[in-house]
Image (cartoon, rainbow, N blue to C red; front, side, top):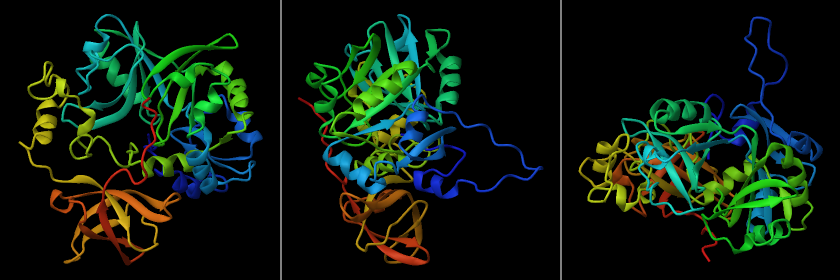
Length: 405
């Protein structure tokens, strides 16, 4: 979900910009990159490792003979294992935890059922999105999964704003794996029997070889799949057990990026950031009626006045996120300018773009004034001085296949 804040924001850009040679004596030394519990396994599988959100992570694997394109297509056809242990895991506990979290998220936290998960937006007082995250009601506490590049700032923000109302504990000893694809349940149920009965956005605590795991039927690829939180000490053995299943291959950041873009999902640091509001990002669907005007717990969250005014049309938007398809086979990547097709005037910018592996067509998301956001609107992107015709399209680009039962 997250792009690093201090390095290029796509895996391909990261790979291309990895420094070569050694710094001069006068150059400040870069902070050491952190490693996940699967680092040795990544090396064993000949992963191409790149800096991402302060970690050394695989952008793609060479040892399996697949590569980024094949990793993407394998995920769509079977099941792929992603290491997302760089993401932050946080526990909020105490009787006031849910009500406290509702002061920072415009989502229904109090009404979330046991072992149910929800997508959330952590907001600043001006309505800007500080992070997008997942949260689960685990009974005696809430479990949050934060973007890796944002987790330190998020934790400080949560402590400052909620620390007097609930206990807030970071859980760096937990690893996080994502198994994604239409055959994910087939493979995972051999290790965790019964997990195939879960439905989208449902979670469960499950034992494996004496370790306590917590899995949710969710992910960020648009496919069916699971995210599994587990002790770091168990991560390597569990990952190897999954990779031993005939359906499963490893996949890296590159495929994860192309999969989420085809699903129309935002990447923090590119498609959304602290200067973006939920309405601008077309994320109003994530805000439940109970928190909107007229709802039982309307407002009461950071930036509520602006957020609700924009969602309800009482305050006009300056820009809006749209989906774009190119009519020529020229990849359009961020931050390509977007032009009015008739006048040639610059009106916006691409926030994410690539050649879709599933569609074999350039796709992108970007921001334009609302009058250009209607489906079918014709725009031009500028790629290396050449104009590329683009059409505003519906999201997702590729239909999602979440398992809803």
